[in-house]
Image (cartoon, rainbow, N blue to C red; front, side):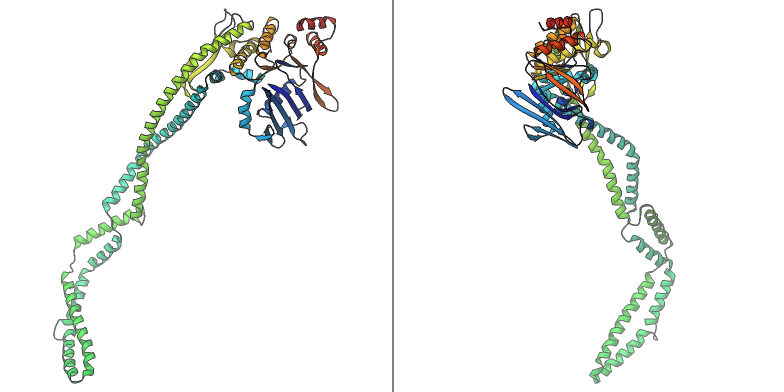
Length: 531
């Protein structure tokens, strides 16, 4: 249970220390006295978000500290707020996640905002799931497995559609790349082929000149008795004879001999060249066509055709490899879809079974809260898959026999809504075994006999859990174990003051709440309420 709450430098509170007791604690006071500020402080120390303007004096930190006691073991949670926010758990620094996890076991705060939230049908599935989780420990893991599977399915579906659209959009590009690849492969252009063809064209274009020139050179070398080879033959002969007489001429003879042999070989080569070269117009045309094709491909793809072919082939492989990914992803999608079906079916079974149980419990509580003819049903219908399953959950109520079942937000009055919220909280508190339940004006819109019924429900709840409630109802305040009065004092600045009232002051406070003035008549009424 919550043992004490220390608040410093928070909104209108300079410094405040509240002590709470077991059973039923009420926070009372005039409207605007600051009761909800205290609940807000408790909410913030347990991890709720806040605005920067909550700090009363910006020169010093805001400090909130809550002390809980369970089986004589104290747990202290504090939060210091300045330019940043720090949590401490029993004096040691702690994280927001750790505090929020602890909060679920310690306190359930029902604010007016939460009442509005509970009215929204989109939140009804969360309430039902919370109820099931409190009863079945395995259900929380089941919900997590389903959510993880659904998110995987959603991501895979997104990728699948992307690939599918990409494959369709890229089909033309794939065909074009295949055409380019075939064009390059059919051409079979070899490295340096362009230069080689140009050389061949140059030769064939000048074949006649080459033929005649080579033959003329041959004829000059050894064509007749006046040729160079014939003259060298004579010189070679003379030097051969002379070198036999004078050995010093052997070197010259050797030189002439080599020249003679080389020129004779050169002449033979030139004769063969001249004989073999021939002007072939058809071959020339073929070479010009081949050159034109190569030059056209280079203009189209670039100078390095082999590199460009590799790039085209790589791009084609990337695009077509998506087919395998597509098949793999489709198989994964089918597997995830089957898993979703199995998990959602199991979740649906849990919800159906527990919805009947929770509906009956809430309806029973409503009858005790003077809605004796109320009919409360948790309706579950099938919808599209989402993060929570394939169920749509909605609370339906008929306040009396005349009315038909309708969504809670559309039909219930303010008093009926308050009693539905109280009924839910009572059921949840018993199932959850939470130590402290906090109500911020759960009795809004309730008066007369209904107020008495609400009082009885709160008192009954306070036997199993500590209850802290803000209320303006004297009949509810009268049965409190701890009566805390909240007031504002106007000095140099507005400050909130609190005091736990003894029997005499409690009587006066109840008289003031009931009649506006403290007189004998209002005091008698207050005594009646207490008795």
